[in-house]
Image 1 (spheres, rainbow over the protein chains, first blue to last red):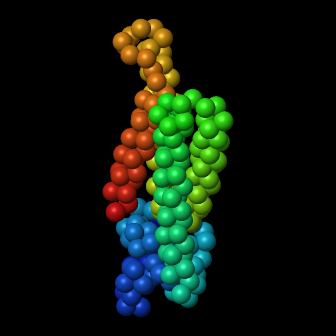
Image 2 (tube, rainbow over the protein chains, first blue to last red; image 1 turned 120 degrees about the vertical axis):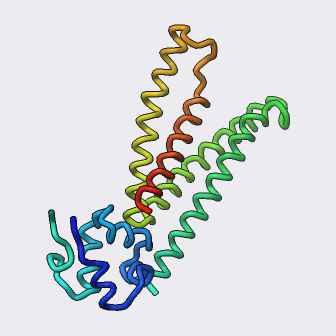
Image 3 (tube, each protein chain N blue to C red; image 1 turned 90 degrees about the vertical axis):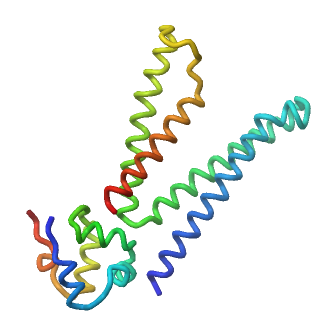
Length: 63
Length: 135
């Protein structure tokens, strides 16, 4: 699954650690999602959606 | 603030697991060596040490469950993958080892301790591989 988290994070000018703290996961989890090695759960996807004020479809793309 | 609570809870869970594990290991040593070296085969003390060990073991299982529930989702996946591999290796390896013992393919007895060591090592290796994979 592709995602735009790295781009959205850059737009907000925040680090992986900042985002990890905000959505209550480890920095390694954010890193693995950005590198598309790990697909987040629905709950985490909703948290990211809420944090970036974007819909899930705007952040994730199913391929 | 919420994030800090999550990380603090994770640390607390890990600390609790460590305490229960140390207690269980020490009580295992007590029930194993106590009858011979401390209370000279007094059955009452042996029963007390046995139930202490069993109780601490149950506590350790609950602490481990709490620890896993407190992990974030990537760590949970890595842990579950490692557990699946350790279980598979334990069942397949353990039964193969037992068959080798029964059919006299090997000159040593298949002890339960070998199985515990096999499961522990395969779990540790799978955890390290999992951590490296998602690094």
